[in-house]
Length: 227
Image (cartoon, rainbow, N blue to C red; front, side):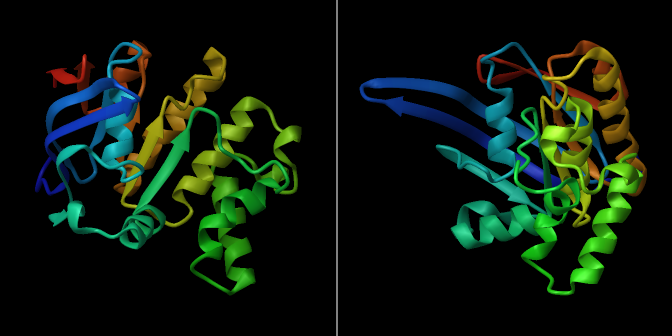
C-alpha cells in the first residue's frame, strides 16, 4: 500500500474488568497501528479479547491504561461528548446482533445517524434510499426488521454504518447469526467498501474470511500472538 497514513494507533493498551473482588485482565499490553484504507482482521479464540480490543479502538469503551490515537489525536483527552462526536461522524459500526430498532423501518434505521446532524428530511431520505439500494435492498425500504431475513437485517446495519461516510468501519462478528451463504454475501459487501477508501477493522473467528483482508492480527489471552 503506497503512501501509508496511520489512522489508528494503540499504545500498551490494557483492559481489566473488576467484579466484586474478582479481577479479569482481558487486554495485556496491546501495541497496534492501522493504516488508512487498510482492511484488518482481528481473530482469536472465544474470550481472547478480540471484541474488547475493537470496542476500545472504536471508543465504545475506555482502556484501563495505555493510549488510543485517532488521526494523531490522543483520545485520552477526549470528553464523552468528543467520543460521541467521533463515533457519529468518523466511525461506522456493524454488530453481530444487527442492533436495529424494531419499531422503525429499514429506511428509518439507516437514517438515524443523519438525523442528529441534518434537518433536511429530503436529503436524509434520499441518502438513506441510495445506500439501501447499494446493499441490494431497494425494495425493502419500508419493511420493519421483523419482515427481514437475517442477511437483510445485516445489510441494513451495513447501510446504516456507512451512510455518514465514516473513515473507519468496525465490524464485530457480523456473520455470527447468519448461514454460510448470507455470511459470504455480508463479508463480500464489507470487503467491497475498501474500494471507496474506507478503513475496515473486522473481528471474526471464521478463517475463510481472513484471506480477503490485508492483515490478520491474532489475539491470544489478551496479547497479540501474530500480526
